[in-house]
Length: 310
Image 1 (cartoon, rainbow, N blue to C red):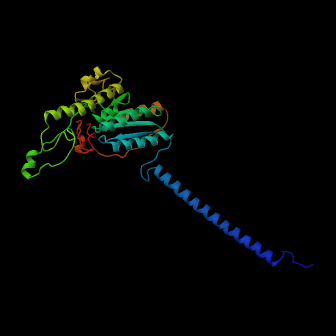
Image 2 (image 1 turned 90 degrees about the vertical axis):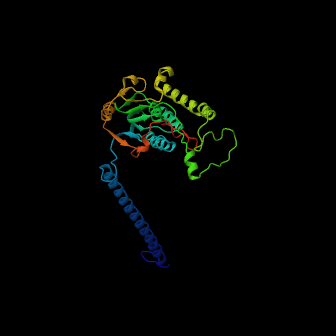
Image 3 (image 1 turned 30 degrees about the vertical axis):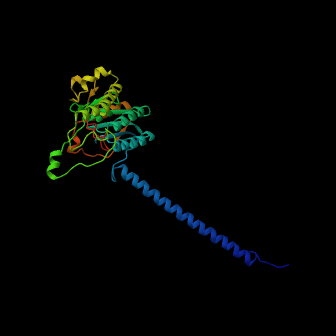
């Protein structure tokens, strides 16, 4: 009988050594991976803490939060979509107790105003929304703000401008002087009711008012009456395009409910929620330019015709 020694044959030793080498290689890879993960975790933790204390970007507060929507632009579908997308994220985040919607808009698109108004009413079924008019809520801005009750305002805020206007600029005389003529093609009697190169005729005025301005105006009035839970008849005296300051006694419980400044409103919200609350702006802040401070309700017949409810 052959004798293979205490540790077996040479072949068995080689197999054991290969297995040991393979195990050592796997162990080294596991240790390297664990080391890399530990480093990444530490970096992420340091980054989180740095942001938490405001060393990087805006601080992300601990505990319960209130999302602040600073609606500081004209009402366009693009901006409204952006607001709704941000608010959708808040709705899914349990760290946010509710929303403080700060209105600072001169108005804009009728359709976008309707979209956001209805969105806010549905939103309150899941999370509370507090509406505050800080500087201006005119036309489309007021259309949106009226969706939430109670409607709280700064006493000097501009409120109202419920009405419709379609601006038209006549440049016919100027065009003649510089040699510009209009030469387009269209089919359909009413395809092009207005032009910069001619004054609007009486028939065209009647057509545009009946087909566009009056229906939009009525939709606006009915929406505000429904949102404010008052009759159309009671609202009509305030729907002639007039603007009011927030503390005008005539509009109390008609267009607005309460006059307050925002820091007192926040203190009230903190007491009501009964927790340590942090107010977090979820929208980028953009200053309103001079041309964005217009208060009229504009409509044009180009591809963006409905972005003028101001």
